[in-house]
Length: 195
Image 1 (spheres, rainbow, N blue to C red):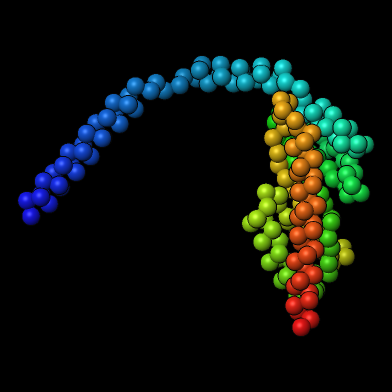
Image 2 (cartoon, rainbow, N blue to C red):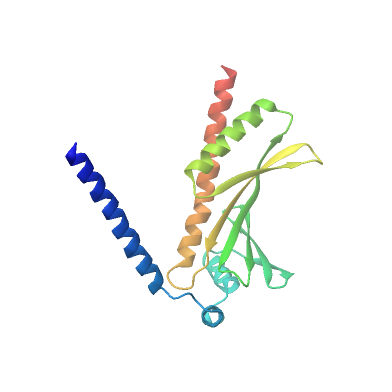
């Protein structure tokens, strides 16, 4: 009984000491001023302006991968770069104010939206792939022809140092891994449904 009371007192004492320590630690950290934030933003802006643009990095990397990129200027520092890699059409969206770019592999699988069994299979497979892969598979519905289309997207950091070309090549290959995984699972689901 006494050991329980002593234990309780020690716990309360430890808690008060911890709170006192934290309050002193919090007081020692100065709040940033508007001037501090503006200076940091200015420094970041200067660093970014000295870096090679994402557009140039992506174009150089695609050329190293033996692609023939086509640049579409969307205005306001936004670009879409379309290219073919291993007979698949891809695009990369770039904004000049951002160091992240987004890769798209669109319309690589389509099926009739009225095929409910296929829709169920595709939803399950897409969820499974998205759980296991760093790439995102999504689908869209076309009202014009009643088709559901699959697409792959991936947002990646565009960096100057290191080897962006190898990184891009790896992600492009991952798109094909996703395709192969999807087609394997859809074939297995179709075979299971026939049984």
